[in-house]
Image 1 (cartoon, one colour):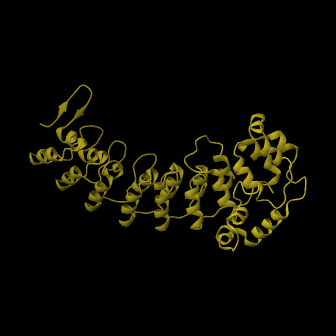
Image 2 (spheres, one colour; image 1 turned 30 degrees about the vertical axis):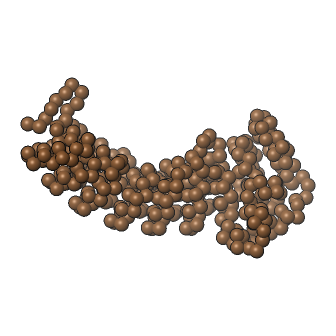
Length: 358
């Protein structure tokens, strides 16, 4: 009675009304006996269509008339998994009130919960709602990613991602959980050069020297992020600075030339890194590793780099190293509290542009 067949689409009036958000028409059709759980295509029900469109009033009407809140479509998604657009928060709240399972996971190759999906999109308000209703902040998908991994991997540098990360951490997300490649959330945030998230993770106690499957620490990922053009809205050099001020191991001097070869254009990162060493001496490998076009672009800077260690370090650099050695991984916490001029604090904290190299 309610099926309409077109050359390009098979649907029902109820499905179409729900997908377009026409709640008055949805109400009328339901009162006329339309089957609320009839899937016209791909096992996709009107409740899926309403959630996908973010039409909360349609969702409420459908559930009130017996829609299945746990039905999966052909892609293995439940209605809750589709709540990411328009009034997604209202849709999710209504589904939860009808006992939709907050921690249900998609029946596909990813096996994400809505908390994973919300974190991926930086939907902090949805993350809040899910956590308040029993969402598991440490639930893993098929790749062993937690919601915190998702937020750190998909961040584009906008504040909503930082807020999402903070909400997850405050609600018990494991800062040092590892995915299938042994990457922690900090590895992923550094790879995206999101210094605001890196700061949050470090402030809450993330380990800064964990190595992934490839033997890379978060510092390695932060340096590599500097080579990606248009990398989010973050700053790779600030990520490097935060890590070093919180006890990260610097790059082994024996392979420092590889940093120059791969990250030569990121002069701010290189400056921060060089100034973190007590002793460091340039060698011929350094000069051979910097591409010619990079050297021409930053000639003054690299003239200074190639002379590092060939004359005694300045007294202020020696003092800086002593202070930093004394404070260890507490540099970022304690240096701002010292009774010193602001510029000197910046110098101790390896702020790029403060007094140059060594």
